[in-house]
Length: 190
Length: 90
Image (cartoon, rainbow over all chains, first blue to last red; front, side):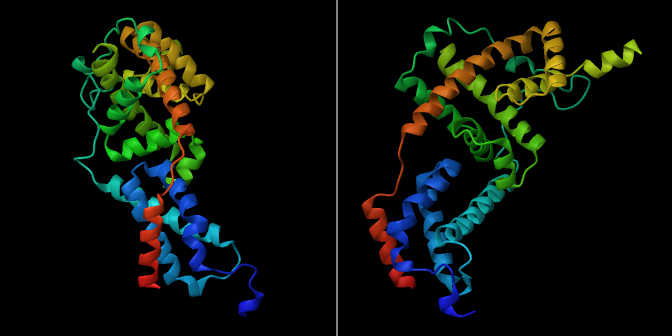
């Protein structure tokens, strides 16, 4: 294909000023770790430079760069997903035996004292939520944040991370059960 | 027949709370909601979970709202550093 026949062209000198914030935002709502996101953005630009000669000009350069970043986000999810064993949430229900599916006694929901008083929006509450989310294994935190804090559609998350809807609900369920317990201990009954 | 119907509607606490969580996003099906409410009648732990879950959802919504207001971008220093690195590579 002749260079001039391309509908879109690349101009790497302008990438950072034009797209760095856009890419950063794309990744931060998914990964929520600014150091890591900076690395992902940098890797995206480097990968873009490296494969610039393969750019066919069919998409805009922004779309093209986002496609690269998208793959980096999936790679990251796969990495945290395969870090098994150390990255599991605390179980709340028996997993086998005659009590399978029943609450584990010490994880049963406790009564909260005056929860309406404790619902006033303030910094302390937000910090406690952040801490509790921070205690989740990375995989659970990522899916939970995307669904609940960033309010992505279920379909969108499943497509991006290549997981099934039932897979997503198991992750959300485990995350929420652990967060409930954490908020109970550190906020509602603290 | 009645026995089969009964078995179909019976779910474990783990399943019930999973449906309850799904319901917080408005994504539980009609049948799931029937199973859940039936389970709530029999299980006070899950019923409590259900009640508290609404509070948790309110807390998360509050958090989501404040996150939307945040504008996060790269600092000028970060961008300058990135530009230098790009020149080295390019």
